[in-house]
Amino acid sequence: MSNLDLLKRWDDQQAAYIADREGRFGAMLDVLDLQSGGAPAVVVDLACGPGSLSFRVLERFPEVRVVGVDHDPSLLALAREAAAEHPGGDRVLFVDDDLTSAGWTDRVRAHAGGAPVAGVVSTTALHWLAPGELVDAYRGARSLLADGGVFLDGDHFRYDDRQPRLRTWAAAHDRRTQEAAFAAGAEPWDTWWTELAARPGYAELTAERDRRFADRPAPEPSEVGFRLAALAQAGFAEHGTVWQLFDDFVVYGVA
Image 1 (cartoon, rainbow, N blue to C red):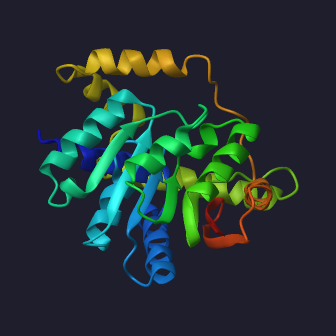
Image 2: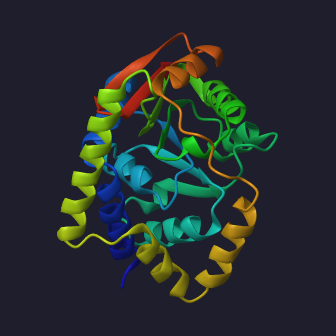
């Protein structure tokens, strides 16, 4: 099985948990297009995983260079191997860095080669950061952007007790999405990871992944208001929401 095939299977299992995932990606790409005048020079993909969004950015913008950042060595290995098979793979650099470590923005800026960063993006990832870490990551994203650059974060921002009907509808919609995807042949999360770990050399990488994140339990889910407040705290001149499907949002900030 090629690396791009395994990446496609990642996309299929992710789509089981994220309704209209391609719609979310499309909204983010449209904003990058509109804000940059159709030609972003550099886009940084935070917590990029195996590169799903990075590769879509490459396909949408034929001159863009992408820097993908993640701290999961197994997903980074797959991203790099998939890049070697991708037509635009020579325009992406996948780097191992920790968004909670000091100096990560300086290192990313160096990887970008000093070119203006038109966009910083992330999808289904930053919910793993604790609240204070999230604000710091947003602030770091703001510092990377050229004037007028845009930050986009797509994720589930769960409803709390103040919106019980919306929370009930969103949960039911998630269940229906998963049932339909699995019935159509999508793999569950655990199945995909088991197959990745079985690839030559990947058992060690997934063990290192487990070691790195062993002391980082997932924080409690947050609702979209917290993300908007974090964007304001991080210093974005303008911020808001550009896309929504139940509790799945894309929030933005303009530098």
